[in-house]
Length: 459
Image 1 (cartoon, rainbow, N blue to C red):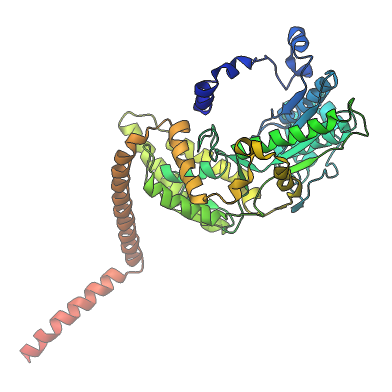
Image 2: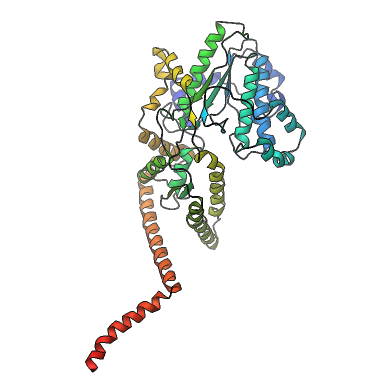
């Protein structure tokens, strides 16, 4: 609770933090790794938000199954042991069914049997499962969406046993305003792209410029989760004890791309303008570049703008006794872009009727704290400006008072960028002319023109 995120709470209601009781556990373990004493302490819990998951796309299949799939089953088993349970919310993702380009607020047929999948993960080692992964997952792009889709099947199978909610957020990024604007603890989504461009290490990306980036501020997401849990819990209490006749499984697609959409090209152009206004202290090169959906063009640009400069600068680091790191960093950037290709080259139509309608359930007296639809009308440029400021403050630990110095540094980098491009262009033209033997031709033509009048004088 020492995060800047809780500064407002520490000032206005510090006693609320005393109500937080941390519990040691591990979602990858059977029984969630909970001790007998902790289980006894939590016997009167009435609301569960199951948010624990790995969002890495490159997790080994075994780890992803044990954490995202079996871990969900263990949470539901724990929920069954609670006598006063009113609601249990399972947080999934709008991308859990990526083979469908229209995603309704419903659960779709499974890609595999979740019980068999858990047994396989428990019986086989990591290396064997990684070999089998492409065949077992079929066309699904990574272990994350595969295991999250299986977890949704567990939700479906437990819906008559537990007061469940399925909540699917899209890409969750920085806070809009509550409790502070621009807060985030990772580089996921468009924020990571803007930071990469601002530092100067991301200058090209293989992507459809017209791809709609569906993202949700984390505070919007959390408010909607609380309202959905309140609604479900209230309905369950009215039909206590819980029974199959209680209100059935609500599904919410927490997304807004059908209400306001921003394409990847719009975000990149917005980022360029904002990076010029709010540069990063640690910029290695002038912000620039763009996106392309031509694979070979992107490959050439990666070689010219990412790999080659990284190798040259790392060589300079070695010569000056510093630790080289850029080539390794660029490999990570390239690997991340490859992992994202499936999602930034395709578009999905997420239906969100339940999510939008949920906002109308909020009582007028609670609008100040829980109303979340104002993001639809919010100034998107102001939002991303706060995102970059938040990335500076909370991710990169850079102070606002250093922005003027960063602006001076960026202007120098832009001059250096221009000079380097000019030298490369001149060098390329020179080498091309030599290759075509044009230099000799031009010199010969000049010599001929200057000697012609002299011959007339002799005549």
